[in-house]
Picture: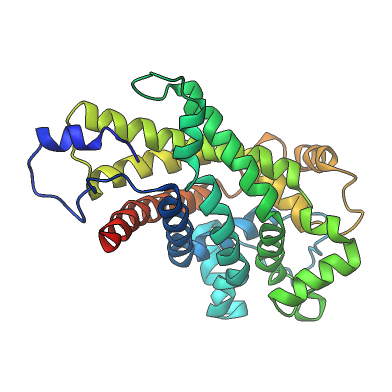
Amino acid sequence: MMSTAELHLSAHPTTMVGLKPPEVPPTAAVKFFSAGTAGCIADLVTFPLDTAKVRLQIQGEVRIPRGAGTVQYRGVLGTLSTMVRTEGPRSLYSGLAAGLQRQMSFASIRIGLYDSVKQLYTPKGAESAGLGARVLAGCTTGAVAVTCAQPTDVVKVRFQANGALPAGARRYSGTVDAYCTIAREEGVRGLWRGTLPNIARNAIINCGELVTYDLVKDALLRAQLMTDNVPCHFVAAFGAGFCATLVASPVDVVKTRYMNAGPGQYRNVLSCLLALLMQDGLAGFYKGFVPSFLRLGSWNIVMFVSYEQLQRATVLAQS
């Protein structure tokens, strides 16, 4: 992602891991396509962890019956094994279609356009973008991406939570049915339920991911600790995933609860936040933190490594 990469490569003639950085920087269109595709690849690899995270976050909601037959989830592996045992292996990928639809629109915008927007915020003549320009770019692309992709996120969360209900109480039979049912029962606004907390979440996550990745990768290259290759991308992506999880977990829990709520369960996002605080205390804001980190950390690693390699492969194919 950094235009300074070539300078550091000349100082480090070590063997490259993966495709070499192109001599001609990738265009915005190449980055847009590569980000969406990389997001889909990362989702395919890590989707079960995301489903486990959602199940742990909604566990204990007042509206879900907590009788003797209620399934309880304990930890990441416990949640995954319980889902496979009680619902079958396919339950781990419930909502995948909406997840992939989300990434093609969401990741393309927030990640693919990040460098272009960063340049808009960078003063003319500046040698490199400052922290402020990077943060503003992350917030901007994150907010725009959420606005465009929110319906796919709502359907994904609803589907992931759907399997926690008894068979007769499940609300949707398929992805298309979910879109239609939500629009019919809750209006078109229902498809944009939780947009504000999702904008807040993704502005934070986008900054946590992209800015951290940008800064760590740039620091590694400037200090000549690594070359612009897969190990460097791996380390930067790991740091990005941890930072994003740490700062975004509270907003993520509220967003998931609010999106999954039935009509009238919460008056607004604030009432959802207060209900969670009164019921579970501050610890409730970090429900599902471990699966969130496992998911975001692994998702970032797969996505950024794929993103860098896809950019280089696309440019190579065009030359």
